[in-house]
Amino acid sequence: MKKVGVLGLQGAVSEHVDRLAKLENVKPLVVKYKNEIEAVDALIIPGGESTAIGKLLADFELTSTLKSRILSGMPVWGTCAGMIILAKKLCNDERRHLEVMDIEVMRNGYGRQIDSFSTTVNLPELSANEIPLVFIRAPYVVNAAPNVKVLLRVNDKIVACRQENMLATSFHPELTEDLSFHKYFVDLIKAS
Ligand code: GLN
Image 1 (tube, rainbow, N blue to C red):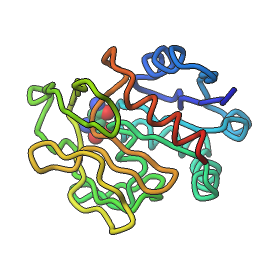
Image 2 (image 1 turned 45 degrees about the vertical axis):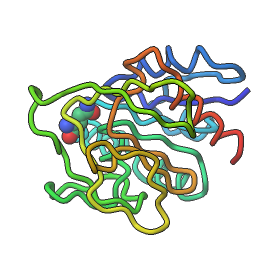
Image 3 (image 1 turned 30 degrees about the horizontal axis):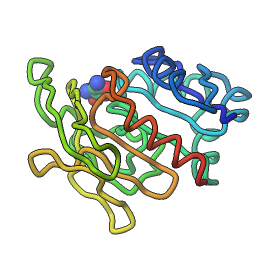
């Protein structure tokens, strides 16, 4: 049984827990304290508001614990605001959070709330079926280092990528019924 934490500071926490609960050999847990983060096998940083999540990470003094767990190989997946939290660089914001992933990210890359949208894609590597994608004031990756594998582009923008134990998606798989990205993350955990 793999213990998969969902960082429970702010954002779409329960939705990720619900999705993880549908998968075999996974025990989802909401985590927000250091000792809880130290006890999980992997972690999801959910979507929400990166400024709020980043501030709470600092207030709860979780930044260094999280950083060292990720840098020593704990699988982590950042969705939307979570992608911003993982990025080493933000091209339109002075703030930096965990700075672990070699990506440069544009916050609110598609504009304001009104520019939120959904679409579907074919991604045979993950699923034989079309995968629905929900973007909410989403970021995208403007630059990815050569060690970052691009998993998906939508309209030429990088919206899903992976660097070793780190996965980042611009969109919110936890807000759809489709489990492809959660399964992909669990496979990554099993392989690590
Ligand atoms: N725009 C938000 C931010 O910058 C992210 C939105 C989301 O997570 N749905 O934090």
